[in-house]
Structures are given as C-alpha cells and as structure tokens.
Image 1 (cartoon, rainbow, N blue to C red):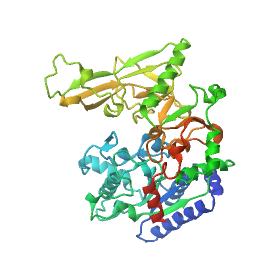
Image 2: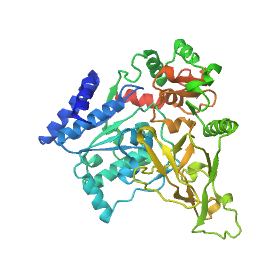
Image 3: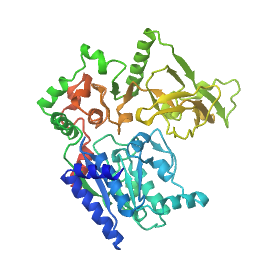
Image 4: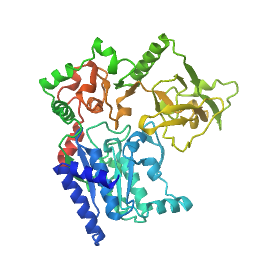
Length: 460
C-alpha cells in the first residue's frame, strides 16, 4: 500500500475503526518502550462492517511502525488467505493437513534445518492475524498455539509471546467435524482455555452496502434470528423470474449458491447441456489412477472399485472433468499458479485459466495420494485440480463476495448460518435473486447459530 493509499484508508475510517487503529498504535509504542503485555483481540461484526478494510489498515500500520514486515497472516482456506494477502494456516504453521474437515494426525515438533529455517522466517514477527474465525476449530487453535510457542522459543507463553488478532464472524458456518473455536472440548481440561484469552472488539457500522440499508438490516436481522414481515417481503421480491433468465442472472452467468453438493452438480450439468445444445465442442478429461504400495493382492482388480466417489476423499481431485473454452472452473488445490509448483502428467492436458485480476495462468495436472477403499493401500491420482463452478456450495463460498448470485433458500437448507452466509456473499440487493424460498427455514432462531450468539453475549 502506497503512502497516498494509506492516507486515503485512514481518512475513510469510521469512529470504531479509528479507535481500534489508535489502540493498536498505542500498544506498539508501549511495547517498544518495554511493556511486555501482549494484545489478543477478536474483531468481529455482521456482514459488511468493514472487517477486511480494518484488517488491511491495521496490518499496514503495524508494519509502518516497526519499519519492517512484523505481521504474518493466516486463514483456514486458500480462498480466504488470498483475499487477505496471507497463507493457509497449514502452510503458515506447518500444521497437519486437513482432509474432509478433519485433522489427519497429531502436531509433531519441527526439527533440524526445517525448524531453523522457519524460526528465521518468524524472527522479526511481532503480530499474527488470523481470518475467518468461524472456520477454525478449537483443536486447530491449540495447534496454532503450540507451533507458535516452538517457533518463537517461548514455550511458556501463549502463542509464543506474539500479539494475536483473530477476525471473523462466529455466526457464520462452523468448522466441519470440529468443535467451534470458542468451545473447549472436555478432553482438554484443565488446560488454559485459549479462546478466553481474547477480548472482543465488535464493529457495527455497515460499510459494504452503502446506500443499501434495507439489505444491511436484513442481513443483520437474519444473523441473529430476528427477521420481520418486512424482511420476508423484501426476500420474496427477489424471487427469480422468467425475465431474469437472460442477462446477469441467466443460467450460465450469475453463480448459483446451493446448500448441498448434489444440487451444485445438477446445476453444473444443466449448464453443460445448455452449451451442448449450442454445439459447443467439449473435452472429457479422465483422471489417471494408480494403486501404489498395495497391501492386498490386486491382480485383475478394477481400480475404480476401490476409489471413493466422494471428491473430499480423493485429495479434492475429480475422477473426470468436462470442459470447453469459456467454461467456468474453480481450483480445488492450493497451487502456486505464478510459480507453477505442480506435478505434471503426459497424458492429461495443460489448460490456461483466466483468473480475472490475477491474470491468465497455466494450470498443469498434479498428483495426490489418498487411501484406497477396503484397505487395498494407496491410490495416486493425476488430474487437473479443477472443478466446474457455475454453481457452488455455501461452505465453499464462505469468505468470498460476488456482484451477482442466485441463491437457494428452500427446503434443502440444513445447517445453522447457511442462509446468512449465502446472502452475505452478495454485495447488494440489485445483485441478488432467490430460486427457492422456504420462509419456515428462516423463521425465529431456526437459521442462526444459537451457541455462537450465547458466546457473543458472554464476550460482550
């Protein structure tokens, strides 16, 4: 961020953001003067209150005050990390890789040159920012704490004696197959409750939907289960109509956001059929699966019979992909598209993808390994790390914001916070359409995370 950009950001802050900015500034000055107390904050707020804006302003101010890079940034997913200019938690801290929402093993201490290199990378770091708190499980928080203690050589100080700021909204979707970040499992008692070391800063002034206060009111009411008849009227006015089938909300234009994966697959297939009807030439790319390190006799075995059909259990790689020039796709692996850090395969083609602001990049096939079914050993799959993305699940969209979307708010909603997260992906009412609306799924506390609401009340 240039000096002029930084001045513009500072001038745009509201009162709450300015107070927080001053708190961080004064804390650093006190620490540089010898104060050993370290700050631990949870910064939150409803949709559109400027959490990312505040995140970037604070990060830049801290680096400016230290006259060096003094902040590292992490987030649970590659999408979330890219949006805040950071790394995934697993890349940043070398945590056990998560597959299908679970931690794959215990956190082992780093050793040898690997530890030496990471300690060097962290030696000038005084602050660490973590984004998307709702997606971080308490088990992961423990691993983050343990790794930072080792990297900073301060085993007796929480988070290695660093200042820690966690951003996010607890009322969004909780982590998959883990307890929420604020809920310490009984098996960890009587250890220190790490989450309760953090103080709350709650941003309340909406910034994203400037001049669109009705949408802001709706989102914040849905977030805490307080929708009124007027809010429902507003939602019903956004139902998808036949006139919407052309233009920005057409079948193949605005992204569809669904609660379940089978609904996503059905829509993506419908778009493919639309293009087939136009005579568009398509190519089907099939994954190359090989059984490596077999633990049972696999002679004459059809490998497909021991490979899961669940993409979350195949290293996030699909078994096949139908694509054509102009198809919308999404990366399913955190590859470095600028440096080309991927594995190749001769029989699977390379493709060029236009990532918009990120430019055009060559995506090559890569290899992943995962357990075969029925204890046959390990499968190695070589495939392009892509999936079709005219539609996406709410979980996959968390952390993203789009200009146009068609959202399912019908009977298939099944998780607390799904409707709120889905609606808050859209920047304004003008960019919203709803393909199915079941008001009973949005009534009272049904759509919101009541445990998260209780935790917010406790922190206040």
